[in-house]
Image (tube, rainbow, N blue to C red; front, side, top):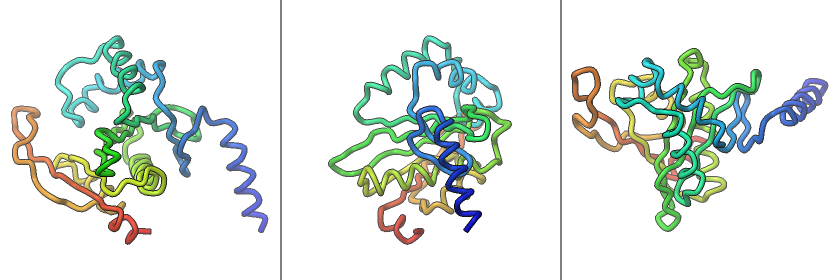
Length: 197
């Protein structure tokens, strides 16, 4: 009983301290992207380790990032959120739904932890679960899909654990470090999600 009351009190306290939270998990919360996030996003996307993981070949200026954010905020077929660690209130990544089709009830899922120091802390797992639940419970989507490098075993394990299924292979889809690499198309239907509840 005491633990439940303590947990409720602690969670209410934390919610007050969070900056514009939209979806709240245990270790992270997701908030809408803001123009001020351009510095964090461009720094992450220019980091050599992150850039390599995300297959980014071109530099991203602060101006480029600000323009991209402004376009995304205005977009009617995208929802982009910043992943924030609750304990420190520091941004660690971004997640999104792109190409949202409210007639077909489908979207493309995106996730990037932009601070390598935050890799392997399960922030990606938690953000994926929050977004999938939001897609099916709130947006009433029927399908989510994503593309993931066939060599990215940690990400594939996260997606499979949440309920994504490998649907196909895009052979030699991307070029990185002198080699073409395959990408998997993974998808999840509402019915798949219900099985994992």
